[in-house]
Length: 84
Image (cartoon, rainbow, N blue to C red; front, top):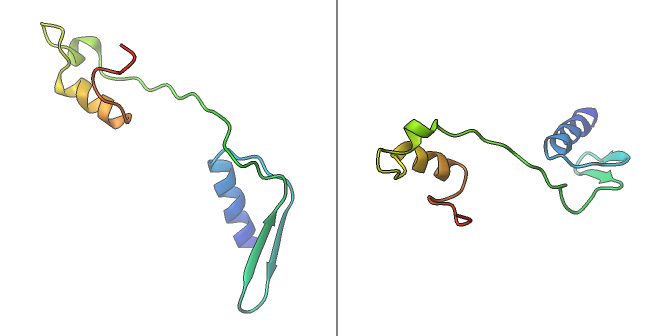
């Protein structure tokens, strides 16, 4: 039971979720966890990712190289970004 609570605490912290009291319950055939004050959504987070250097990301004509396209794809985006 203690290990189950410790695993849940670890996962909640990895997910950046605040939580209140945790109560674990169990019988030989059932396990249950009650968590108080658990928000329904994660707080917003801002993540900064550095891509390839400008001279590597663009060719002589200013077009994106495979390195820039791969970086954009890895960030869940396409090239060029829609905000440009």
